[in-house]
Structure formats: structure tokens, C-alpha cells
Image (cartoon, rainbow, N blue to C red; front, top):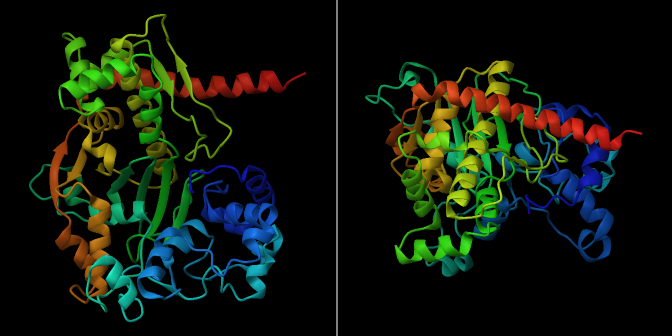
Length: 439
């Protein structure tokens, strides 16, 4: 549902209010947040949905409610997606201003008036009914939740990095950027004091790591974009057949095919005249512009497997350049970052990981446990059960480094030039839009 962008007119109206709560979402609310979606439901499905609904849940809170029967919400989901403030609670004036005064009238009972920190124990644990469904004993502790990406951030960002030759070893945890990359990508940076970054969500207090402020950058489509580009290509059936014959995924096959055609040059140099702007579903961060579109320059008449492999590479690079743009926005606002911690499905792709290292110029740390979102969830469970006294203690004990990938610094000049082209692409797109809107 987060990927559903139908509430465009609602989010425009919300942003036109310039209400103070928008300062904590990068100055502009995203169509992927809950307020515009709720307003859309009220305006379009009033009788069938809006008037009949007992509760509106974020997915992690829905799951904890199903598990325990407790309607308490997680501080993480309410702060990150619903405009709740960890310090001040709900802002009545915002909901009244945008036309959702219904929530204020019933004391927010439908969207949450009991809010708990992630890792807090919920009710009496697993209900007998939920225990039967899951095949687990009733009464097992259930923790107040985190959003999936935030659980991934929690699962990687606290790992003990000693002995890997990383700059962040002697630096505070605030020097680490967790990148959770699957269908979309989320870029989680934490700080001791609030940092306001234009176009980047937050600062959110204690929304991921207790006691720290969170800024959340993101790209609306990453894994989904790679799939879209690869599966939509004329050579995809051939790719699929060859990958199946080798018992490989299409991406493992593409990576080996790139190694085959690169000759003596580094693989990244195959895209010297092919460039992609990756915002096929709008830009979440740091431009916060859902009207932006994807762009490709450098297409030829051929459509063979080589062309598909190189377009796939250019798309992966474009996503990494998007991460670089987000890092620059975070650092310009006051963050100081030295190391990327990657997790999620795309972190299993060695090309994706190496391109992120090469293009950002930062080492990438991969977890020993690839499914870091599950590690983050386990950390919360271990706190709810009393096995650890705090989330921080559980993080340091349960997060482990698996592998470190360093950037190929000798390729820096090439990627700096490609990055200049990358920035030109969006500059030109805005110029084209202005021309078409003109008289």
C-alpha cells in the first residue's frame, strides 16, 4: 500500500497548508505517508470503508494487534508515517486543517492513543488464538514493533566492526548509514541532536534506535525498477532460458555475462555512454518530487543480451548515484557519514553492493545474517522477553559483521564524471517540463 500513489491531490493539499508538522518530514509530505491515504479513503470510500472502520493500522501495528489483541501502536510507525511527535503527541490543528477532524473528536482511538516504544512488551503476549495459528505457546512475549526497514536498520547499525580496518571503528554509531534495499530502498542515518534535512524524512526521536534522532532518506523503487527494466527488455526470454539452464537466477547470470563482455576494463566502464535517471515512480529523497520520471540516454538499435546486461548495469549504477545524492543531502545538513551498512534482498547481489561502494566512495558492511530485518525483529523480541535490558545491549550482542566490500578508488574519476551526467539528467528533465508548460 505504501507504493500506491493515488492520493496525489490529497498530498498536494496537505503540503499547501505549510503546517508545522511538515518540518519533520523534510518540509514536504510524501504520498507514501498515511495522512494523504486516510484523506483519500474519507473522500472516495466514505460509506464502504471510512464510516465502518474501527481502526486504521500500519502493518507492524496490525500484526502486533493480531498477535495480542492490544491496539497500542508503536512509536516508530506513528512518528515516521503518521505525524505523531515523540515529545508532543498528536497535533490537533493539523488533522483539523486537512479535513480529518474525526480523529480529534474521538481522541485518536482509531489511529492510536496508546503509544509504546519498540521492544516494549505488549499485553499478556501471544493470545491462545494467535498461538494456534502460529504453532507457538500462548503467552510468549510480543514486542511493540518497528516498520520493516527500521527493523533492518536496527539489525545492522550496531554491529561490532573491530578488526575490519573500517574508519567507523573509532567513530560514533552516528557515522554509519544503514541502507535497507529491497523493492524500494531506505537510508537510515541517526544523530544525537535533531538534524533537519530538506527532502529527507525526520528528524524522528527514538523511532529506530532509542535516544537517537532518525533521518530517513529513500528511493521509491529500486529492486522493483531493476525487475521492470530487465523483464521489459526484448532479450529477457533468452536471458531466462539461459539462466534456467544454468540453474542460476537471472541476476547471477547477468553479473557473469557482464564479466564476460567487459574485456580488460572494470565492469562499471561498460556504461560510458549509457546513463539512467531512476525515478520511474517519482523521487522520495532528497528532491521529494513525485512528478519526476525515469530517463535513459544512449540507446541503440540492437536489443541483444549484451544490451540488456549493460542497461541492467546502468540501472544499478543509477540507484547507487541516487544513494550518493541522498548522502550529500544528509552531510550538507550536518550528518558525518563514513560507512554504509547494507541489508535486504538487493544486498545479496554482489554487483549492487560493489557499485554502491565504488559510487559513494564508502566501504559497505554486510551482515553475517543476511535477513537483517529479522535480526531487528528478534532484537525487539529479546527485549520484550527480558533477555536483554535495553535495545542497545541487544543490538551490540546480536548484530554481527559478515563481509566488508571496499570501493575501487582507482575508478573514482570515472564515477565522478558519470555523477555529473546523472545530475544533468534531472536538471534537463525539469527544463523539458518547463518548456512544455510554457506558452
